[in-house]
Image (tube, rainbow over all chains, first blue to last red; front, side, top):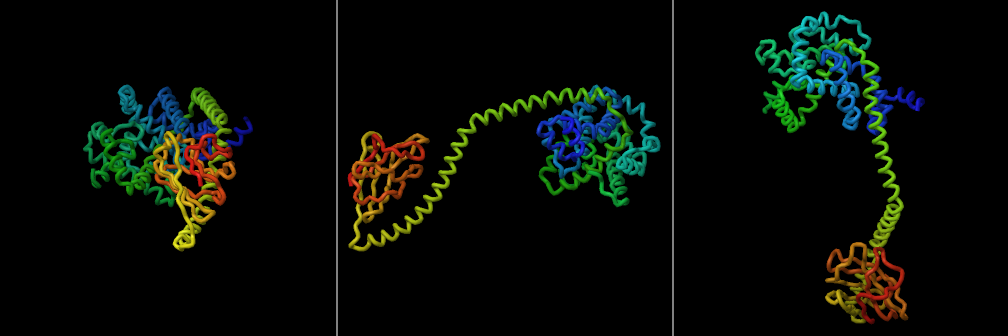
Length: 195
Length: 240
């Protein structure tokens, strides 16, 4: 069993997902160990505190375990798939009334920290993460703010417009320009957008 | 939704920022316009990059234990369920193997029979040509039977001394696992001489055995695949 576990460490994510689909808990554990930090960082960023982030992680990884068969490699990497599950479940949780109240307080309390200069002033271990963060650094703060409110806090574009006291068209425009700028960054570096 | 509205909403969609109703509307449009799917997937990949941007946080070891504590028993239950399912398959495997073997034999038999019938058609065509010649003989023999077989119209067309075709119409129904079997009786010994079913009505079947010197022809109902043993009670019979 331990020997098998060591062998699993050598397997690609796509192979592990196939094993998970065949009810292999050990393969699932290896996948968890590989991606738990990225997933937890996202969960924590979205939920704003450890208990809610733990709940979101448990919810999301059980979905990974039970829904491994729905993974489609042509749509992106296993990591992207796992992170999208965390994100979608996070949005669902944030949109529940109780969570919304907590998030409202969190957004208000943490607004200064969401400025790019501070948000990306860390030293990064993962090169891909670094690239993404570099890309986000190129965004004007007002565009990043809109993207973050939408992506991490689960607000709809209408709610963001209300929250920031902006016309809805301006919010949509900032979303479009923000995403375009990220893509342009990767294009200018001659890099593919990580899938 | 039209193209303009799609363009207007696509960024909010990939960020997960559409209200429920707009999201449904967007996805309906997307489902109907698969040519836009690739564009949305590409844009989703860009939005998905945001997931990599948060400052690293380490989950606690307790979280791992908690998740694995749910996953491992579930994996065991699924394996047990799978084992019992496989065991069930195993119990039926011998029967299935037999059925599979029978099916393979049936396919081979049907193929051979088909080839045989093609040969027969050619032969029969030759026989028909022969029939047109005044020197050749052919005759029809009607088979009769009591009870349920009373209304059946079964005739054997004998071509020359060797070949014969059985034609059947309005045969009584038989169970799915039964078939009709033809017998040629020579010196009181019935020889199995072909099978036929009546899924199509009427049906014509070449009789396998030569009729030269035979005393009678009979039809019985036998288990699927036919019986090597002579019937005790033929359903239909005719003296030749």
